[in-house]
Length: 116
Image 1 (cartoon, rainbow, N blue to C red):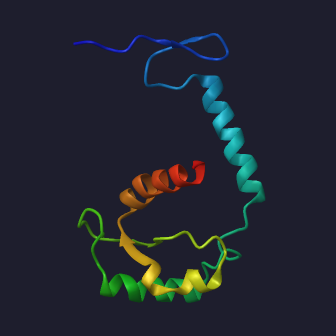
Image 2: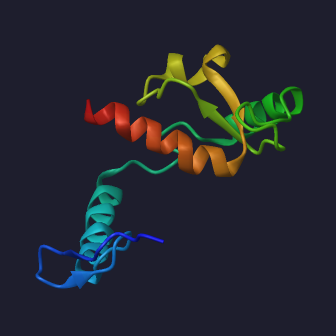
Image 3: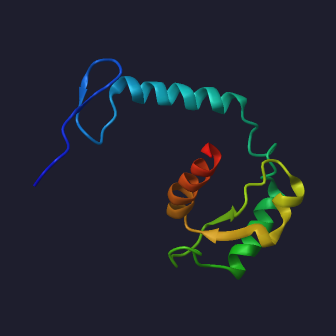
């Protein structure tokens, strides 16, 4: 069975295909920490007790993940609200997702659209 050959990291170390070098993993952690220091906390972004009540009501009416059909536990904003309170509370912009779909596929899609 053919496998990909190892690659050279920018630091000069040989790294097996499909894995990250320790220096790159450290760089990723530092980048994410810098971003988190500038990001408002969840309450400042609108995720308050009022949101929790609205989320519970929405999940009661839409109990299954829109993507895979598993039980949903997250209310996702279809179009990222980016702090816009009107878009944040627009229920037509909400969808029920399971944690797996919200935290992997949906986040990947959003990152992809930001790079364009």
